[in-house]
Image (cartoon, rainbow, N blue to C red; front, side, top):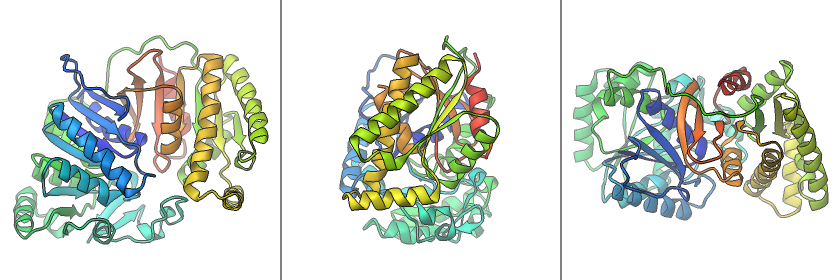
Length: 428
C-alpha cells in the first residue's frame, strides 16, 4: 500500500481521487476510525485524516508520528504527507513527525496545484497569479498567510535544512532533476521544495521522484504518480453501481468562509436553490442557538421531504463575520474557537435533519465543517468514487447506512460547483 497522512478530511479526499480515478482502490478514514485488519481486503492506497490543521504543533506532531508508525505496521512502503496547497497548518511539525517515525532524513516537497491555480516559481507560491501573501489567503480567519516564500515558511517551522529545485532545472527533464536531488541530498538538505509552472512540470517531476519513499505537499503530483502506478488505467473513475440511496434530494451545508465558497453559494441561490442562513451571531447564547437551529432543522426537513434540494450555510457576509469575531472576542473566544463553534452548530443541525429525514445524499463545503459533520454522523471509512472537478470527488461511506457524499475544500471549485455536485449526487 501507499500510506497517506492528511491534515483534514477534504484534503484526504482531494488526494484520494487522484488515485481512484486511475482505478486504484483508495479508502479514506478519520484516524480514530481506522483499524488495520489483514483480511485481504486492504485498499491499494490508504489515506488517514489526522484532523490536525487547527491543533498545536505538538499535538499535530504526535498524531502524524503515531499514524505513520501504524501505516508502516500495516505494510505501507511509500508515504505521502498531504498538506494544504498553500501551506496552512502545522507543516514543519507534521513533515518532521513522518520523517522521525520512519527514521528517515529526506523528503521531496511539491505544493503547487496548477489545475486549481497554485504554482511555485523560484520558491515563491502563487494563487491564481497572485503571490500567496496578496491572495485571499492573506485574510484566512485562522491561518492568515503573510509570506509567499515556501522555503521561509517551512524553514521557520523545522530545524531540518530546506532547499529548492528551481524551474530551470525542472524543465531540463527528469534525469537532471534526479541528479540535482542526489547532489542536494548529499549536501545535507532534508527537504527539497520543487518549482512547478504547469501540469507538464508535474509530469516531469513525477518521472523523477516516483520511487522516492517520502513525498510531501498538495495532491496535484499524485495525479501524475497514479498514472505511473497503473499506466494503462483508463481515467473514468469508479464504474461500480451505486447502492440504493432513497430520495434523490440533496442536503447541502457550507461552513467555509473562503471567497470561492461564497461565490458558489451566490451562484447556487441564483439558480433557485433554497438556502437557509445559520446566523453566527445567534450561536453564543444557548437559548438563541437552540430556537434558531430548530427553525432551520424544521424548514430544511420539510423541503427534503418534498423532494427539494436545500442549502444551509453559515453567515458569510464580511460585516456579519467581523461582528461574530468581535462578539466572540468579547466573550473570550479566539478565532479558532469561533470557527469551531460555527462548525459544531452546523453539524448538530445536519445530524438532526438526517435523523428526521433519513437523508443519504450530502454536499458539505469546508474542511472543518466536513470533519464535524462526518463525526456527528458517525461516518468512518470512505471509498473515493468519482471526480467532479479537479481535487473535488464524491465518495461512498464504507459502513451502513450507506451515504453518498461530496466533501469540498472551501477554496476549490468553480462558481457552478454546487449545482454540478448536486446533479452528480442525484445519480442512481
